[in-house]
Image 1 (cartoon, helix red, strand yellow):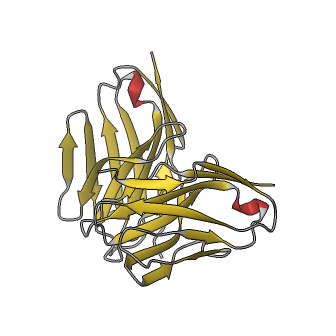
Image 2 (cartoon, rainbow over the protein chains, first blue to last red):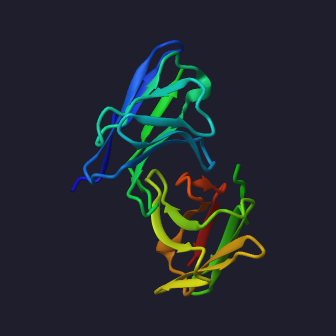
Length: 111
Length: 111
């Protein structure tokens, strides 16, 4: 199993541009999550999903959107990039047991 | 919502000595408490977890203790080694399956 994979690894965006961060898991986990981690800080939950077709907001959802059309994929959309969205983004998935497995992360720089 | 506080923010320990990191949580409904280790530039990785029906759990040099009455839990690392140097995060979740993370502890092992 590849586990949780994320693309791209690194991206530079200009203010106002849009992009989609991809996340895929091959462990058949129902739960998927998006976090952001600012430098020297902990992880903050952006959005999460308990299954295909079901998503909900986390602690810091403003400026982001998600969709969950399949069990495997959970893309995160930034519509109008702002410098405050410069961060490292981690996707994670978990089975019912709550143990979350993280992807390698996407480093985003907004200039 | 849940609030998790973690102390200390930095910790330096002589190689071979023990390290202790403490966390407190606010939501008495929280029932799952994982600890993650994050090396520089890498993803968080689960090192140990504990559920609310257990007071202590050990895995080789790592142990976690939970005091539900006081709403705090701790990570203990014995016989520390240079490869233990990393940032450690505690987290808590309830039936919602959403993890709330602490702000992290940067552990440095001094050779």
